[in-house]
Length: 441
Image 1 (cartoon, helix red, strand yellow):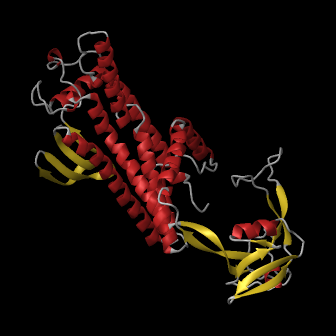
Image 2: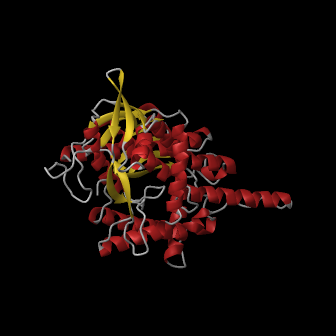
Image 3: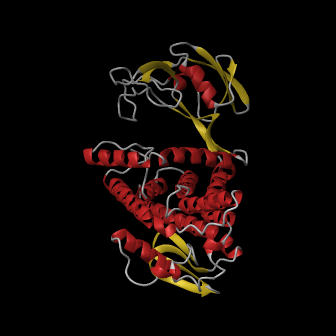
């Protein structure tokens, strides 16, 4: 794989992630402004500001580290109690953090009765604002998967022969060139040619190469009739599939192992021909279906994330191979994007791979941000819903409306969550550098 193509793949992924982040924050920005909340900043990235421009009351810009983004809404939390607005906080480190969070929030307010603040919105509007970001990632993923499946299509083997092998090479030998000792491939011996279209195999009409392959695999050592279409005419041939020993696989394609841990083998028929592959466009709803299937798969990873990160660390330390379905950092995603871009494959295949990778990352952003812990969007949704429950309870029992929930009290929990996320991120980045997951082994 070429270095230039590898770098291009990484750059394209970074640009795609920047677009994903921009859409995520736009999902927060638009409803916040529609509901009258004052938004001070809309930023893509963290760290030093590279470029910004103020339009109206909002500053829009880009920062140096493109690993996230944020919008700054006025009054995310209610104002600090008056007695807490002066003097130093008592109670140690976490109490100081709570007070600092309150003071930072107070700076976004224009007085205690500021009407254009987030915490004054009805519960449902706050939920809409906070869910707007993840939903944008979900919609972007649907668009990307729809482009991938319905505009480009899914590769499928046709019933047309692309190439015919000259000989049968034992699967245990790592070579591609034939020798004088290798037997002639059954397809070549039968007279099959590149460009032939399979019509029937062993008297059974076939519409796909998979159907033909299934019959051939079950016909090892038997002579079976094959009808092909060649130059507009049907030609009858006789094929005797060779018997080869291959690892046995289950319905999911995984190798079946015995009690001793060794791979089980099975004898199958082999012809020695490859099919032409073409892109088959899927129904327009296939992208949406694929997106939600990915949501389920990612959710299964997210709830086991700490354990899977621990397993990743163990694999890296012990030098074992990582789980290919395990979590990745943005560095690992960049490596995969580089491998896809530099692969020895048609350009359309590589484009499809990059689109699929970016779509999957947006699904991951959607699911991850729904975790009901601050500072994630799901945490803010949980706070709003808790306040809604308290208000409903008070209304049912005709009690005075409760005060707005002061989420700054959860700053210690937020701190622990952030530290845990940073720790897991460091483990994954180190693992992706030292023991990366590769598409090509």
